[in-house]
Image (cartoon, rainbow, N blue to C red; front, side):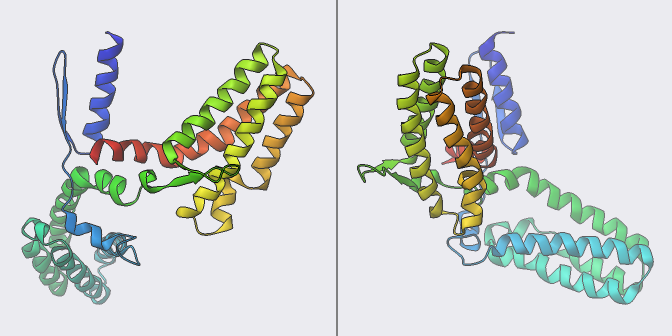
Length: 282
């Protein structure tokens, strides 16, 4: 199998995992990603002060669990109470996103409450399974795409201010510069060019400091920002600089790898996959 075809197959698997419709021909890959209705945006931050859509989904999941448990316990009073909550929250989906109103199984939600009131626990379980399949069908098609659009950071709106020149830089350009500086350190250390490595280290240290300031665009507390660029990790960065000055080849390489994992890779694991997926959608 060719390298290009292997990449296309990996992309195909990724897109199918988010509910996309895809076809893979010999020389082409066509992907159709179904986006949620734009009306859902009003129920997510920053358009809304609260994550209303998410909290509604969380309540529905909790209500479904309560229905299952109280049905198993044959506790009709609590079962009815939770089924009423579920019906109300389930109906609210169509009010929040009118485009999905016709997709809801409103008759099933009504029948579920009837069965709960009768204490027909087998019927409750049967109806609940049907509603659950309907929920999972929607989740398969839209959940990952919606998360990418409304839960993932939109880095296209983020700028990084250069601490020396005070000039603003696009986030992507800042990240490219940071990557270049780190690779330059690695190259220079391997070739015993420690003056060049030290110069690249200074650039990297400054760029990390600039980056930490840009994090405040989304992360509003010191605790959030310090997770990646706080005192502990920045002390490791300073240690790297000391090892470069001391011309310690192996220890410098090891320290550089530690910084790359603890800061860069960790940040990428949190943000980059959703950000890259957003790039396919926008």
